[in-house]
Length: 232
Image (cartoon, rainbow, N blue to C red; front, side, top):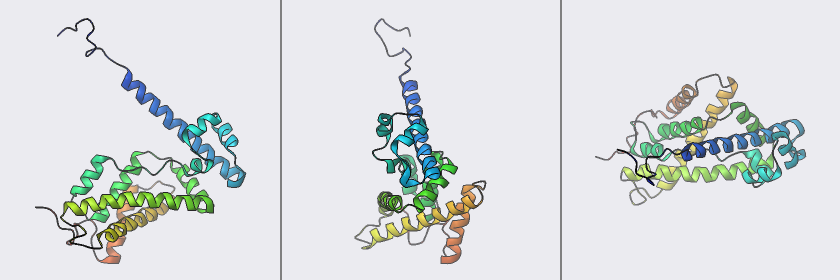
């Protein structure tokens, strides 16, 4: 079928490619600013680093810096932890044969892996945050917000199995407990990964961590818990 004059439906467009290029450039600039911030803090100390120093190290203007970060501390903390995709959340809500804890841990890990984090940068940032009270407090607040969002996802899974506040009055506490346990498993796995210079398979470390939960609790996290009934 030939195109008529003025018919743009069959004309190739570079709009999608341009948008993808802009997104990659933006991601690269943000990564460079985060790396510069951590690098400057590692070299000079958190309290001695200025926005000017970060911009000079990243070779960008202050205007560019503030297009990405509202404050200097925001650059030290980096982008918010990646959230699972809608399809990943849907798969988790429907269940895949494992317990809510195991599947939540693996869903979070997949989201982190998909963001392709710089492991050396992650390790340097963690060290900086742990040794800087101002950053540590901000990180606690940010993680609490993330945990609230993940608890909402866990509640969706419970609801898909007919479990609500009516059937389980303390179900919100249960959802937050699941998230808290998942975060603890991930924190343990990150520490084990750092001890191996991140050369070990992260999924293998996670499965080892979840296996330790089974050993301690006597419940196999890789199978659906009997207290988490599935829909017919």
